[in-house]
Length: 403
Ligand code: PMP
Ligand code: GLU
View 1 (cartoon, rainbow, N blue to C red):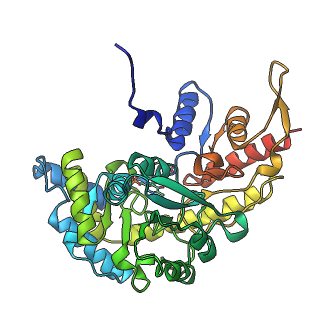
View 2: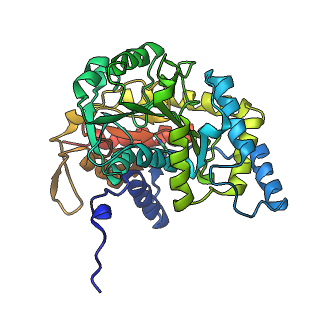
View 3: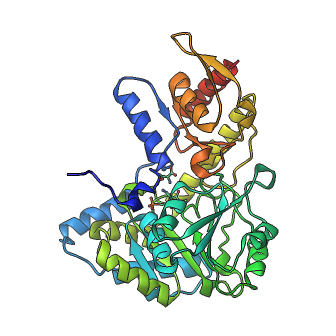
């Protein structure tokens, strides 16, 4: 039988974050001392009170299907969080709980994007946005945002990218991969442009909300007239160190929530009931774990910024949130190295640099090309300070060895 994969999947890129993480894991399994700064996930364990709630849920036999959009108490807890932390009023019916922020995003895109609709993506942006938009038949429209404006999109850039086919703007703040955080004023300037285009929705990916070094998280949904046009995507993965539990959610207008619920009902049903009980404990329980982890990430941010600034050819922007460093490294393009067989190689692009660092520094990073900013490279600093010091020492040495 012909092994014929659908065009839809053929047209899809493989997730580069997971590709690099798998390569690093393979080398580690073969005995190489690789430091992986590729996959972005907190290195902390899930707090004990959250784990205890999951054990309790198992013992209480939460082993059957739950409601497709999530347990009512969890949706209520999330609505409570939005009111308390963000000053936003949502009814529990406007919250849909899904299998990670990833499914929450994908549901949303499938629910609002039609064939040939354009979705504006300020780049650099996270690897999966484009593929989700393409899956829905939509067209990603890139707006390149450079290091000179901390990788953020200006109101003028947004206006210039809008066409009659624009259906949505996908914003991520704090951003993966740049770590940039939009201020309230910057969000207001974008909202002011959108006032002229009522057909455009905003998908606001706020999964890194709590990993913020400027003291305050702002959502575009807080700008006047924007809440009704915005879908907030968030979850427990990053804030509570729960990436493997797979709980994310949206907060949106009832028509969007209903559409996501319909899709989810056919596609995956409810997400894991045990994980939902754990997530509820995360929202209802003590919140000091968030600050403990955030403070640790901020110390590491300060450390990696100072270490990376010592590397010749690295232009470093100070990230205001998330746990990624995204230096501009294109001044290294054209530099050379010689392999063990005496063959000369040129660093032609960010993929070449990522592969060189993996092979010669045993440090895994993700090429900026994966995030549509090929002049950069991404290092996740969600790992111990000891490992970060050693990783950046190796990267510096490898870069200095380039001819
Ligand atoms: N958005 C961004 C920007 C992310 O980095 C991630 C993490 N992979 C997600 C969404 C999805 O998070 P989750 O692990 O909850 O699916
Ligand atoms: N958010 C993480 C990253 O960008 C996890 C991997 C993924 O979901 O792509 O590395």
